[in-house]
Length: 328
View 1: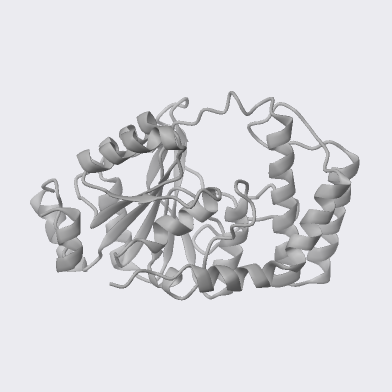
View 2: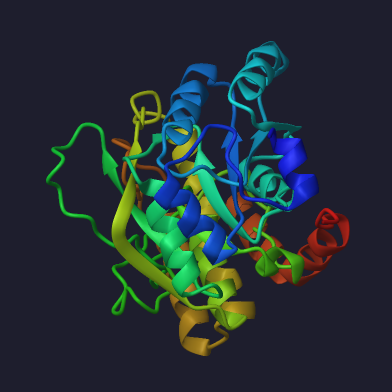
């Protein structure tokens, strides 16, 4: 049964036969796990990720591949989707978070698992996720990562949540937090059906910190689980010396602080901290993990941050109105 037929039937059958016990687990749980996989210009990485997913002991309801690639990579990515029985969707080409929205809104399952093309997965990754989603259907589950450059015994830690600097800090309670693992989080589909969307203001950056705060604000519980993880095949070499990319990320990070202070967790204290860090980044060079350079925010960047933060509610409404979930 291929992916299209499974959608029509509403079944959880696998295009590649799962083991009997896993199939029984999935059927009894009535969990239809969609994978929302985003990719851009990396067919080799995409194939590694898809191989990893199709080697799992339990198979998902569907894999949606939202492709933001340049034209020269599209044919290769479409061929991979055909080879690995995935649903190919052209990406919006407006940045990572617009692509995440596109992937999620094309999913037809009861739950949506995010995935990135530079990830691979340990055995039973999907089985563990389905088990957790079965136990707590209305909870958001996040999972850690291991770098392929580290030893397998490296402890799994909870992803960070927004702190007053924007860099992210360790949650006080990982079982009830505002952290998000961008490429390894499972969401109840109802989140997207309700109109919630990733903020698309910046094409790349730490929007996940804001997304976690938005979800908690709307009453969703987020829990970290060490039951499984992803392997991250990161390649940060080209980015380490890119001061322009660093400036864009610092701008996005500071924007997140202002939106949180003005609209999500509204308080004078949060607004003062956001202002302090904006001024600090305008005066003293700053950096973030993965970069070996430092840079400042200029006056134009400060004006953009403030203007975009003040006008945030209008963009949220526009996103909800323009991105409608597919009909099941």
